[in-house]
Length: 352
Ligand code: PMP
Image (cartoon, rainbow, N blue to C red):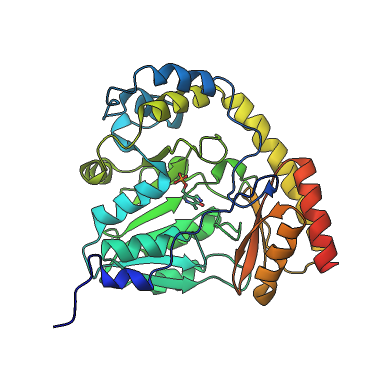
C-alpha cells in the first residue's frame, strides 16, 4: 500500500488563494480595498470593544443582524453574518452540496470559488466568460444538470468588473430549476452606477432560491475585520446558521460594523470619489489599451494575456502593486487620485 500523507493528497493540485501583495513604501492597488482608512467612529468602536475581548461575542449577532435587516427591509431571520463573505460562500456550498454535486459559476471569476468547491467535495462546473469578459448566462443556464445544486453569479464580477443586468438575470432565473440555489455575490454593489444592474435583495428578495452575499470589506472599509453577510430565504439562512463556524463574527467586528453602518453618508461620499476616479482611469486606459471592459466595481481589468505578469512586474518596479492573473490579465484597484496617476504613468510607459 502507498504511504498515506497526513493531509489530503488532492490538495497538492489545488492553487493557493493569492492575496494582493503589500510591499512597504509601494502603492497597493491589488486587493480592491478603498484607500481612505476606516470610516469615522470605527476606530473608537473597536477600542471600546477591546475591553471585553476576554468574553465571547454574541453568537446570534443580534444587534448587527437587526441593524442590517432594518437597512435592507427584510426580517432579521433572513440575515446571517460571517467571517467575510468568502466564509459565507463556503458555508452556502456546505449547506447545499454533498460530494459529487455540482457548483456552477462563470470563469474567470472570484478565485475563492474553485477552492471552496474543491474542499467541500462539490464538483466545479465552469462556464467561460463571454468575449467581453462577462457572464454568459445563456451558457450557464444550459450547463445546469440534475446534479447542479448551487450557481454563483458574481455581480459585478471580480476580476473583470463586468456586470449582468436585470433583464438578463430575470431570464436566467426563469430558466433555472427552483431547487437550485442561485447566489448573487454582490461584494461590489456599492460601486454600481448602471441603473440596469439590479440590487439582488430589493429585486429578487422574494424568490426562495436566490441568496445574496454582501461584504463590509470593500465600500465600508472593514477588510481587516472580516464582516460579510448573507440575505436568504429563512430555510437557506437557517441551514447556513447550522454550518457556520461558531462565533465567527468577532466582538470587534460586530462593533465596527455597527459603527460603519452609522457612517453611511461618508461611505457614499467615498464611493462617489472612487467611481469618479474609476471613470477617469478607464478613459485614460482606453487610449493605450483596447478591450478594457466597462467596470461597475472599484477596479478595472486589463486583458493583457501573456503580457499580464511582465506588466505587473513593470508596475511594481515603478512603485505600484497590481494583481496579475498569469496569461489572462491584470486587475487594478482604484485608489486615490495620486495613486491612480502613479499607476497611469506606469501603464503609459509600458503600453504607450
Ligand atoms: N466576493 C467577491 C466577488 C470578492 O471579490 C471578495 C473579496 N475579494 C469576496 C467575495 C470576499 O470578501 P470578504 O471575505 O472580505 O467579505
